[in-house]
Length: 292
Image (cartoon, rainbow, N blue to C red; front, side, top):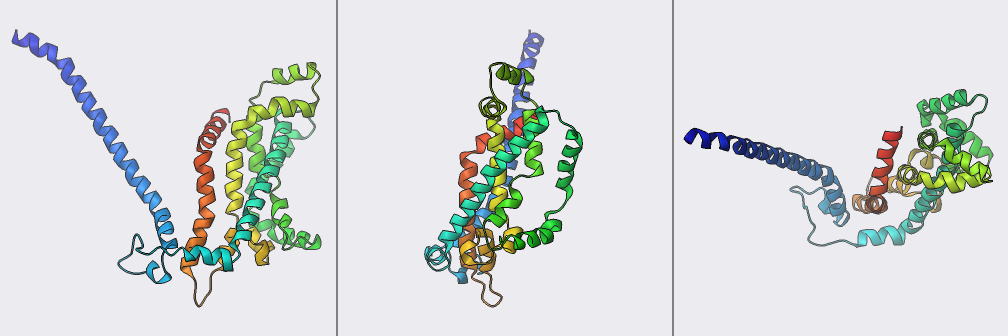
């Protein structure tokens, strides 16, 4: 009788043991993710905290994690005396314009490479992919000479034009367009759709997740773009946020409290955009990985 009871208890004990191991593994994974999240978010916390400190409190030891007096005048100084209002508008205008135009041209080019047959298509696509390997710094001097002759120095279009389309965006869109069945296009042609109407009514609705993912990537890239805007843009009225933050530096008396406040102004829109569109971004990247 005793042996029978022990035999009946063995499966239950095994299940309890597996459940315990599973709970332990989940707990360890949660703890690891919590530690990684805290380490990742700490610089952001320090940035927001320092943006509300007086300059004398930023590098004090031991550090002040949360300032007792919030110095909102750091932001007031930026927007009233440093023209950060128009500078933020410049960044927003430039990033939005570049993103919209790049999405349009990249989707058209990607659609053409994916669905049309023409002479030299494969060779041309290889050239497009090969351009990914050319560092942007290598093209800056000839671009500067061209734009100087076109009188586009210190002009926002001098920043937008080089990024109207890019090889990564074309490749990204081509991968998505190649998964759209040809039968849908043939049915649209039989119904009398022109090629433009077919692209607008059939292709574009199937590219929503790709547009969301690529749009966020391009917007963030352009928002943080520093090197080329710092070469092209000269006057404070035409600066972007990344260039204006660099311009705040002074070799004798660098206003770190203003740089921290300006960094918050620069980071905050990106955080809001990513938080709002995080589902579309993840969905688009996963779809791209599966379809690619």
